[in-house]
Length: 273
Length: 312
Image (cartoon, one colour):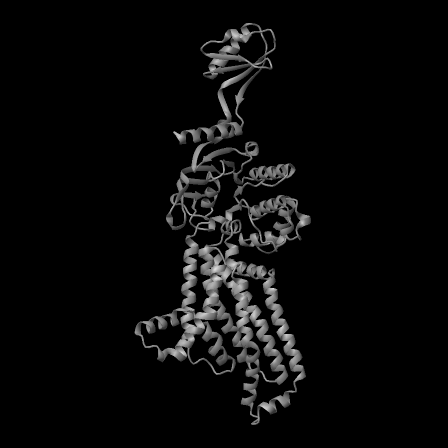
C-alpha cells in the first residue's frame, strides 16, 4: 500500500509539472470567476420570483440544481476530454527505457507500480473536477442560500467515467508503450460509440428488425463503457437529488474497468523491458 | 558467500509476431563473491545489460535460474539490498536533485529524518550539494551520472549494479567515482560493473568476465587474465654481454631495441636455469619482468579469436 501511495503521489507531482493540467485548472478557475461575476449581477429574489411563481422550496431546489447543471454539463465533457489528453502519457512515460529500469530495480511489485500510476492519474483528474464542481456549488449555494449536497456527487460520476476510459488508456499504454492509440480509443468511445449505442438503446431499439444486428448492438451496448449515460442521465439524476433508477451503466462499466485493469496488470507482469 | 549466482541463464528475445529470435545470453553460469568488485566486459550487444536486467527482474530469463544472496530473483523483496545505476537513466526533468533522491529513497524503503539525512549525505558524497535545489533538466551529463550514483547507493545496498557509471564524466570525476567504489568495497559492498573503459575496470576490479554474443568467454582475476606465463624481459647490467648465446630449445631469446632481452620459456623452471647461467657468467641481473597483457590487449585478442572461431 505504501508503494502504491508513493507512485500515486509522484504521479500527482508529474501532473503538476505539466502545462495541460495547469490549463485544465486555469479553465476551471476562469469558469468560477465568470460565475462569480455573473451571479453578482443577478438579483436572486427577482430571479426566483420569475422562475418560481409557486414559491415552494422544491422549486428553489430545482432552480439551483438546474443552474448548477447548466454550468457543469458542457464543462464536464470538456473536463473529460482534457483529462484523457493530459493523463494518456502517464503510463507510456513510465515505460520509457531508463525510467522503467530504475523503477523495477526497486522493491516494488509490478502490479503496485501500475496500480499506483492508475490511481495517481485518477487522483489528479478527481482533484481537478472536484475543484470545479465544489467551486460552482459554493457560488450558487451562497448566492441562493440553498445548500443541496447532492450536486457534489457529480464529481464522482465524472471521475468514474474517466476511471473507465483511463483503464483502457492504461491497457493500450502497456501494450504499445505509446499514448496515441489509447487516447484515440478513449475518444472514440466517449464521443462516438457510447452516445450512438445509447441512442440505439433508448430511441432506435424497436426499429432494428434484424436479429443478428440486434444481438451485436445489444452486446456492444453492454461491452462498451456507457460513458454517455454516466455523464448524461445518471449525472442529472444525481445532481437533482432524484437518485439512480438504473444501475446497469455503473455495473457494466465497473465490470469492464476491473477486467481491463486486471488484463493490463497481467500483461505488465509478463513484459520484458 | 556468493552475492550473485547464475546457472545456465539464457535469454532469447523474440521480435514482433515471433518472426525473428535473438539470443542475448547463452547458458551463462557465473558466480560473484560477496565484497568484491566484478567487471563485466564485452563489445556492444554482447548481453551485458541484458544480464543485469535479468538479475533485477526487469526482463525475464528464457531458461536457467539466478540467485542474489541466495534468494531467487523471481520476487522483489531482495531488491531492498540492491542499488542500480542503469545506462542512459532518465529522471523526471521537473524534479530537483534532492527530490529525485527523495523519490527513489522512499521507493527503497527509507523514511523521514533518516531519508533526509541520507539525501544530504549522498549529495555531499557526489559533490552535488549546491545543485540540490536545481531541477535535473539543467544538469550536465556528468552531473546526472553522479546523481545516478547517489541514487543507486542511497539505501546503503549490499550489492550495487553499475552500467557504464563513468559515461560522460570528466577524468577528475571518474577518479572520484573510482574512489567511491573502492570505499564501498572497503565497507564490504559487492559491486557489479559494466564498462567499456577497460583501463578503468583494470584499476578497480577483483574479477572480470568477458562476454561476447551472449557467451561468457573467460572469467578470472585481472592478474590471471593478463598474465603471459611464457614471456619474461631480462635486463643484464652489461651492454657487451650476449645473452643470445644461451638460446636453445628451452629458451627462445631475442634482443629488444632498449638492450634488454625477451625470453620465452616453457615454464618457470626454465627461466631459473637461465638466471643461474647468467650468474655463473659473473653478470649482474638488473631485472627480470614477467610480461603481462593489458586488459585491453587480452580483450581484443579474445574477441577477435571468438569472431574467427565463429566464422569457421
